[in-house]
Amino acid sequence: MNGAELFVRCLENEDVEYIYGIPGEENIAVMDVLLDSSINFITTRHEQGAAFMADVQGRLSGKAGVCLSTLGPGATNLITGFADANMDHAPIVGIAGQGATTRLHKESHQILDLVNLFEPISKYSTQAREPEIIPEVIRKAFKVSQAEKPGGCFIDLPENIAGAEVSGKEPLKVQSARQPTPPESKMIQAAELISNARFPLIMAGNGVIRGKASEDLIAFAEKLNIPVATTFMAKGAIPFSHELSLGAVGLQASDYVSCGFDRADVVICVGYDIVEYRPELWNHDKESRLIHIDPSAAEVDEYYIVECGVIGNISRALNGISERATPNQENNAQHLRQTIVDVISADADSQSFPLKPQKILWDIRQVLNPDDIVISDVGAHKMWIARMYQAEKPNTCIISNGFASMGIAVPGALAAKLEHPEKTIVAVTGDAGFMMNSQEIETALRIGTAIVIIIWTDAQYGLIRWHQMRTFGRPSHIDFNNPDFIKYAESFGAKGYRIESVSDLVPTIKKAIMDDTVVIIDCPVDYSENMKLTEKLGELVCPI
Image (cartoon, rainbow, N blue to C red; front, top):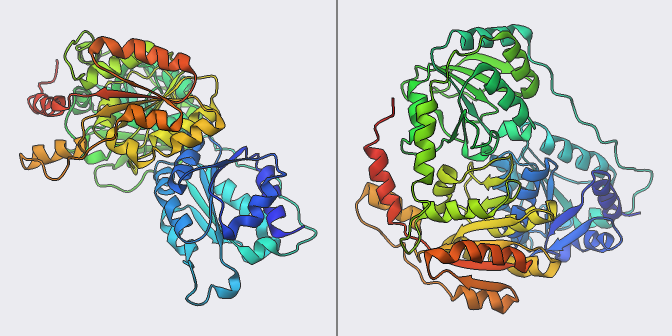
């Protein structure tokens, strides 16, 4: 067999189900072998879309999503989606074809040093320099990518290595390390801090979801009677409907949930990573005593000096601490929670048009089942989703937050539907983010993935306008024109609907789900609510 055949056999050994990408000259040997493989190759319309698909698949499955490109511009097109996965700790393996090793030492057509290009945004970046090392390279890439904290691994496969004959080599046994139980002394120390706290507060991060520790988190909070706030990426780790839930925290400005952090004397950070919400925004006076519960040690940050680090498996840590801690006598955040619930439902009956962001999200939540999945793009709508969308289960609201790249929603929704064909998948995107990877509508239609895309239209870079108005009081170069999204959808063979009144949205979403195809919903949004929110939060008085 040749290197390409061994390469694909090793991917099969890793239980790879899908590879997203675009064929090219330097990866043709791999492409040919894939014709006879159990792996499904999804031909995308742009490598960035391929990387975002692998990114979201990795988030939802916990197994590395795989994307493939050719050399040069194909590989550089992978970078944005690949970096997004790496910074948000989603497991991903990127593969690129490369020119023959006989021309890598000199200036040559489309040749770039891809290993060094990907190295700063990878946990592991390497080149398969000989066909014999392919089993080790692939096993290491998947092992490192999927290990806590997950991230990106990149493999460069030169065309002559792919075509070279190799014998006596087999895929390596798939193994993964078991996370250790945290030291008992640390669990005792954490329990003492919690037992003596006046107002303890839990901040759950995405590590809770990655570690499948949501049920243990809920049990921990219930047993010790401690309220829980989540980061944007941990929405659903505790149901929003739970009486101890304070919703999501992460806006740059203060929000009602921030009042809880202002009052807290002990903050229990569970599966939290500082890239999700930087500590200076919630521990600005550096006075909170911090407990860090995570498989990895805390990052160094002057606003995140840990009083007690409980390092190891999150579920075992939570169970061990709860057995040793004294429960709080009362839930001191009940009034705060009620305020947050009231804020989220305040515009449920709004009749203004264009629709308020709050109303759009309220209506989406009324239509979708608790298990259905919303994929958020990045823009002003993301801030509203993070603040207002009521997630009831883990991995039902996917938000790119570490790298926060526009363009993730449409390709991400496609991957989510492949991973969960039984669920309704809704991509919520702005008109700017939608146009960045809208070409993947064709991919979704070709492979038969039914997704609903709700576009919040305002013909502006709304989030940038928000920041410009807050900082300078005037907008700068944020306007653009849109195509007719209905005709645009129909030109692909998809369906399109335009929202003409407030009462249209709920029945239109229901119809789009029943259509069982790719559906685009053009929904005008009133982003004047952005500045109103800023003004309101600027005058925020915390409830007692």
